[in-house]
Length: 272
Image 1 (cartoon, rainbow, N blue to C red):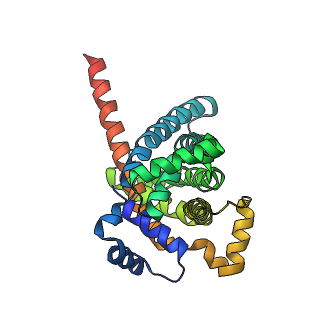
Image 2: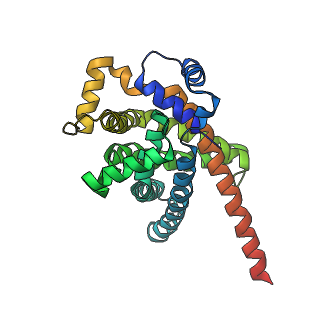
Image 3: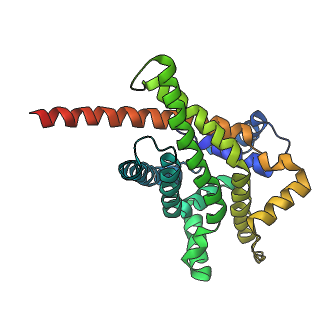
């Protein structure tokens, strides 16, 4: 599922309070054209493939290892496995998240983007591409821990309610959508901070303004609350839910379907 347009609307809503989701969409289309709704799609796809491979592979392997050590019914397994798997994935693709934010905040050619990245690396080193890593970790790692815990609990509960031993495609789909929504709401303040940090970096650079000393995540949160109230930390909630809920539902249900299919194929091959 392509959620690039919802990510773009989310970025605009983070930057401009008081706009509804529909207002944001209409403004983007009117000012930048319909194609701009998919700006940042290439880095999104480049980011999604390695992140998903790393994330799900690590989660499955860690879950299997922990179950062998702690037992099948240990409730902390999805929390630990989700935490570690997401930490690894975020660290690998964090610099691509920064580039995607740049492409979604302003229309840049790939040549301009390459020039900017080259300049940034030459001046501040490769570590500068991981600016926003801390708020991204604070957003994504707790999200993953909450997501997997709630997903496993909801999946078992829905199976029990339906009298099923194995979850169906729809049970996985529903569990993924609900657990993704819960986690998205809880971690939204860190998404707001991450977006603000990364957008400020591009703004200072594009206007040739010297970058001030970086503020901590906690300081940025306090500034947001002082300026916009507590609700400011949940700016862009609706587009985030519109993006996260179906994405999580489709991702986990298709993943579980594919995993079950190939496990069945492997079991059949071993019989012959």
